[in-house]
Image (tube, rainbow, N blue to C red):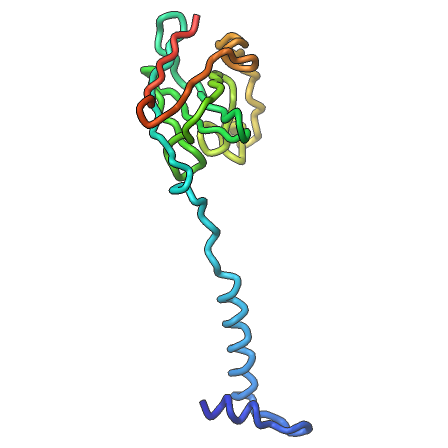
Length: 170
């Protein structure tokens, strides 16, 4: 406390000793660092009324593995997404840290080639060869007909009483 009082009471033309100067600089730096350490704002998921949604995707009577499924909100353009497991089962999430779907009418899109960052792709993308050179991934062929992906005819009306959706694509 005496250092602070001495620093404040220094008159023009007087010099402070190094300890007082270091204390003042340290205090300024500490305050600057603390102001930059704020955590990122979290989404207010509680106000969205998210519904846990799951189901199964089949293609020609067989489970469709590693397919990306999205429920696109027709009102605001947001979407929930998931990826099917080896049995064609999926659970949807909204963003990277919350499971669920906002209630309402959705357009359902299913794809075996769509990539969603954090779900089935990474920022780095691609793979590496044994010698470390980047390898361009071959363009995979979409196994799902356009009427279930690009020009999807699939819809779902999500509510707290309707939360399981199975799709048998032909």
